Length: 416
Image (cartoon, rainbow, N blue to C red; front, side, top):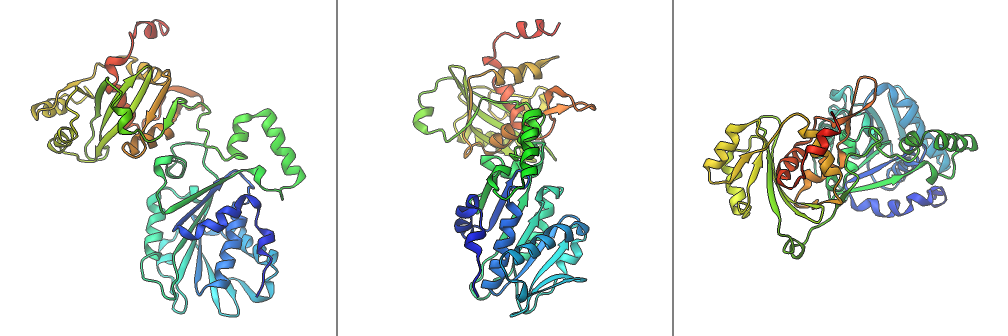
């Protein structure tokens, strides 16, 4: 059987098409109408006719599947001129490849039991497509499904392939943005591809005119809808971020060091950071983090890393934690806090020339600094404080920088 697949693949996706086979997780994200779902549909049909597998397509809500995944795959089959080889049914919703009776199966994640109960005796399910990934409430909801599918050893030299397509949500702290839109969040077995509305040459003239009008009248909405950027509240809290590996030779040139720690326990993690400061540039070199992290284990880690050469400044809202760490031999004292100290610390950080974070040694710092956003009030207006969520490393950094911050007097005078 021959197909016209080479002519159908958008140039923007051709490199992805050639590379994706090497990865378990394949993420296609970006702006509206960029060709993500169309490309995955072609790939799924190609896999179905070229390997002995069944395919599972999932959306969070079952009643959204027919008008999205199901119709998208029917269109792909038509584009590939393969209609005569397939049978389409709605009840049950399936697409059957008639020469071998392989199936594309459709399920909603609102009924996980139906996913777990799928029986596939003749052909294994080795290919899964999560459409509109950002609709899922959490990464855990997705992983539960994946773990129920990706478990047994596959026959016939098959490999598992998990595809995800979505438009990034506006809020940076959505779980999908934190996982696939931050350098530190992407794992080595994952290929992430980003596309925009303008990468798709098949968009209509009217759609292009609408994109142009949005660009002219509302830049933020244009960036979110058409470019696929998670714009948050529209203002980046830390526009001076630089994420890169910090080599030992570079660390040896630094002479101002400090440590900070934000205390947590049962749900929130304790987060320790190792910092350096030079010429209005802050370096976040390392971190120690854990939920229910015992003080003696933290102290041993600090000593083992030789980070007790300077003071560790901890959250003064938990004086007993600072006392306990000091009793274990760590030079620790509580941060000086007061009205406006949070805003002052954030403004000081944002005013630096650079905040350089090593995303290998300080993975969680990288993720939190990249994905944090300002709070919005009930009317949707941007506030001057950050979201009180996943900001543990940022708090620890503020404490650790306390002695480097310039006088607060001017800051508070501006607010009188």
